[in-house]
Image (cartoon, rainbow, N blue to C red; front, top):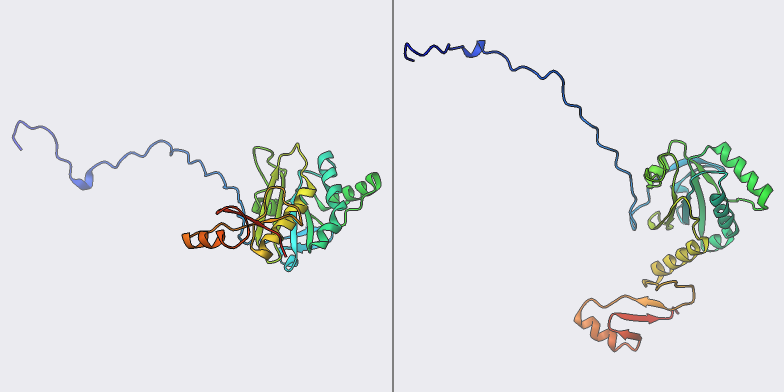
Length: 242
């Protein structure tokens, strides 16, 4: 360094430490990701208190299950839905299918509402209703949609097969009741598809023709066209179930 350079040399060990900022930037926690079960995978396990005692998903092994949520007890749309499910309960049982309701209300609210429906509408609710004050079951099944409500489950319906596999999901808004006949139809259609390895067309009803899977190779196409089935084109074939 020349004699004219007046810049002082500071030893490394004496260098001033970096000045920390007056405050650390705020870290916004990531918003919780809503759970969403997936079709053809095991349904989320649960254990909960109901109007018929404790119930778990394991209790329904060997039976089909329709698990459905409603926003709140003592509300008009929900009342009509519960009456509809109760009136169809024997039809569900005939298909080896149980019903299980759910809302965020307490067990005492459920019991009072069930009694009210019996007294005012002449309908007995014979299936259990889950108390889900903790929202554990509702969250696991994606029943809570913040855009609709932070504390109520939307009208969600889950059809679970006799091996605990989720086969279908249907969601309705708060303002509109679901169709119980459609849930019945869908359970029967799913059972038919799984039993016979077929698909069902739009608005299929028991006794209607079913759809045969489309060929996937040139050889399968040639075979399909020569099988004598009711084939409109190589990809579209229907048949009656034996």
